[in-house]
Image (cartoon, rainbow, N blue to C red; front, side):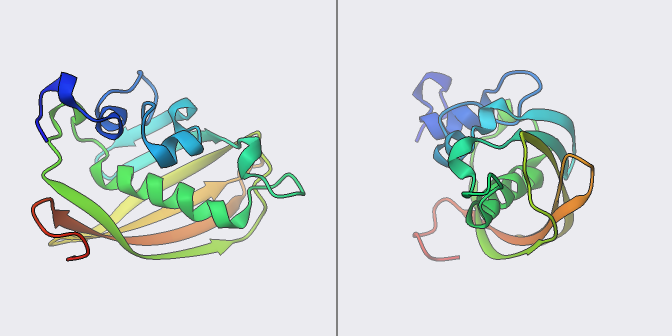
Length: 163
């Protein structure tokens, strides 16, 4: 894969080229499914993100709440961005991949939307292992979801499955 901007695959463009105030552009499959290109980036600094996300109809359960099975998709995507938060993405050259190795999600309140906030923080980096805490807040600013994610940085030259 080359680093020339015109040669970037869509998923890389989604990471490196985004509109001001947004977390990600279009072209990342999970991000597009969650409509993450429309999330408002409220705060970003090294190892920390705060986002206002929307709740698309296709991720709701029959009661109109965020379907529990889709919650980890939000958590995983946000945790990946949290590890790289504060870095200049235009200079990002994808020398490594982040692989999620563990995730725990606790549900306290339903997410009803139409919007909710997500706050995420890199709590610890030790070698190639990153530990991220992610919290969702409902419309009343109540803690609705608490998650912890462990990610492992994997060099791109390693075979798939070799963490």
